[in-house]
Length: 98
Image (cartoon, rainbow, N blue to C red; front, side, top):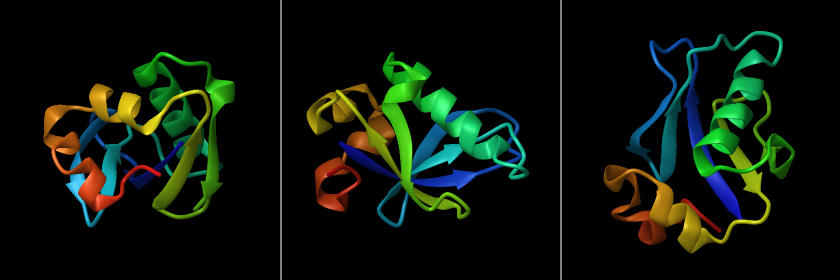
């Protein structure tokens, strides 16, 4: 399944922090330099959903803040169930998952 994410690097903490314009907001405690933010995002998403890092890939937006992640082995309803309440309330209507 695919998850649309807006990545905000150089944050104080790494966390999902809400929704913005149809995307999940992911704040990262990593700089957007030399792929460090991408690596941190993949590691966080994998750990958050309890899957191997190899099952999370960036399918678009590798050098942008707006990214789409492919999460292998999880269905959209599983991702929706695991996201914090403030994010998943309108998950289907915002098309965060596909």
